[in-house]
Amino acid sequence: MSVKKEASFLDDDEPAKDFRWAIGSVMNTVHGSRGLSGMGMDSKGRVSSHTLSFESQQNQLETIYYWLLDFAAQIGWGNMKKIVDNFMASPGSGNFTEMGMKATKLQEEGMKILGGMNQIVKSVLNLIYDLKEFELRLAHYDDAKSDDKQKKEEGILALKQIWLDNVDIKKGRGAIHQMSTMEMGFSTLREAFMMANSQEDIKKMNADEEGGLINDSVMRILVPRLSEFLKWVDYSEKELRKRFSIERNYLKSQVETVKLYSQWMKPYLVAAEKLRQKGFDNHAALVNAFSTTMFELQLFGKKSVGLDPDRFAKHKVKRGYNKVVMITMVYRGHVSQRVTQKGDYGFGMGGVVDVSFDSYALNNEELAAAKELLEKEDLEKSMEFSMDVAGDALEEMKEDLEYFLKSPEEREALEKKETKKNTNDINPFAALFGMFGQKKTKKKSKAEGEVLVPEKIKKDDFYEKMMRGDAIDGAAGTLYTLYDIYKKAHGMASAPGLGFDNYDADVAEDLKEGG
View 1 (cartoon, rainbow, N blue to C red):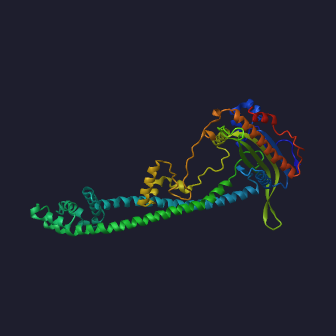
View 2 (cartoon, helix red, strand yellow):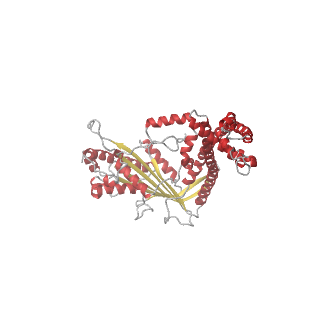
View 3 (tube, one colour):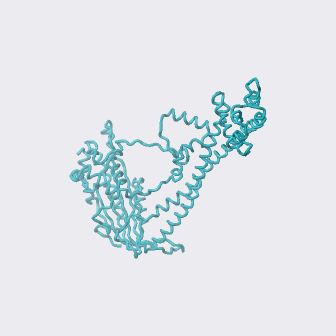
């Protein structure tokens, strides 16, 4: 094993646009080079920085990563987050082939399930259309039973028209529509049928004292036809309501199936996305015919600092300050399969590992602005596809599903509840899938720095300089502990005692006194 003094093989004139770049850009915009120097920071906004690079044919990046992660937790930094996880293998390597085969298999399984889910979504769409038609038809039956005379008449006329167009028309030349034509001579038949609602009405229209609106021939046709219509109204309503209930329950079943398919599909698509190679496009170290693999991992941790509660109990802090630590690991080498002592196969790695340790002292606004800048660059974003495939598929049908998947009593109770709350913040997926829950939109506050751009971030006041000084002290001390203990634990040379020039302690002390 050989320890290098110089920077790693990845040094480049063009800085990588990762989170470190975003923090440096924001800090330079807010404070400028002179302001950063006055706080003891370098041109990239760092309080301190250390680089460790070594090469070994038996080197395992996995052991380095977990040692640093576990040791950070032991010294009180258990909230470390992985913000970068990139890898890429040269096309000629065995690792490229193996990762490609795994990703292809996952994609195929995910797409099979997605295809089945799409068919169910089409079925859901057809069921919604059917239920809408049933509900329109059932509204006519409800109107026909209404106590309102005008609404009752409208409902009966609508049902008669449906019966004439769909039931009676099947009699061919014996249908009322056909017999009402001039050829058959029953011109009053259709109008008399639309006017009569009972057998008594037919007899009144035939009686001389009522004017004799219809003759005996028309009456003999109307009597059985009206009786048939009244029986059809009774039977058809029962069957229609029964079918409405069946299809409504079937709709619930189909939506539950879409949920189930979505749960089955997610692991495949998520894993396939994680196996997508990224992060080292056009890198000189990746030669097509070589057996080379590169990894990049980045850990991010932060801890808030505050004012001394005994000295400043009455002072209200406007924005929080944080000591920030970042560890970036980059590996270049070859990955191969080796037979272990147990007889199975394990991965063996050999190559160069570069570990960069960086510390920062940032307030909430600077940290939020750096995240925003990085998102705008559209780099280092882990996942681009929607995790809620089922919710996206049914989002356009949200209102219909909310309507048909609830009983009338549930809909009425929900309307009263929403009216009482007087809010429109309804998650479109909450009514579809209980497993996703209802998300509440959190308002962005200036105290958290989520609504500010770097140009609008204010400089530190007297009290904030104290917190900045504490953050500088804490971040630099933690970073050096990680760096120094790792070297000592692995038999590497380290600085004796505490005299190592880690950061500008005098500037930090000056800031802790308010500048």
